[in-house]
Image (cartoon, rainbow, N blue to C red; front, top):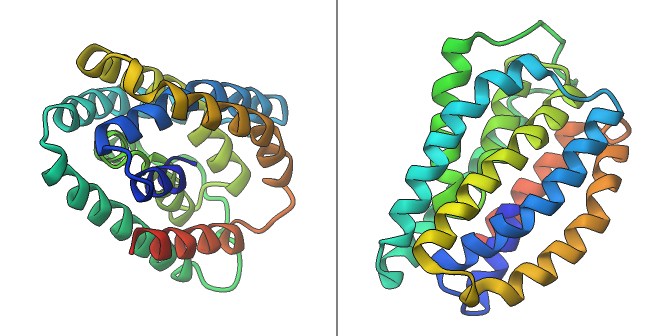
Amino acid sequence: YGVTSTTILLAVGVAPAAASAAVHFSEIGTSLVSGASHAKFGNVDWRTVSILAVPGFVGAFLGATLLSNMDAAVAKPVVAIILLSLGFYVVYRFLRLGGARPTFKGHPSAAFLAPMGLVAGTLDAVGGGGWGPIVTSNLLVQGVEPRKVVGTVNAVEFFLTAVVSATFIYHLGIKDFATATVGLLIGGVFAAPLGAFFAKRIPMKVMLVMVGTVLTITST
């Protein structure tokens, strides 16, 4: 949601900071609906949520602050490169999984989750998206059950987007990205429950390789 929306907003001329702000502000609504839907379907691992949350928040705050104070002429190519890299990264990680879904192995350690949350939160705020691609792909490669991965990532994202949005509002105000936020919020809220429903029915590798491919094309 974040990475695809941000690439489109950048393409139509929205400034990088305003694009990321609009996406994250709308994600408060979409991630709330999505996280609640995944919780209802039993897709959330609350232990992983509790470990990822704090470093993710710290990274999100740092990333949003950095982007808010970066010149737009500098920020736009930086954000585009981050988004393009994420596209390649997602496709690469999922192609490494081979033909089958990974076997469920248990819970990743806090030593693995905490730094990943910090990096993903920072890149998410700067790039307008990245939390999902980075955390989802790494948890799947670690062997976490696919439906738990998607549900857990969405549950943390609600709190993450609230931190990012508050930081952007403090630095930018809300006027510059209010219109984009309304449109993204309306479409996203309707789509979010469908994502939770299909997460149990569509192979993760197929779905996310498609996302990575689209992201790579749009970022280019």
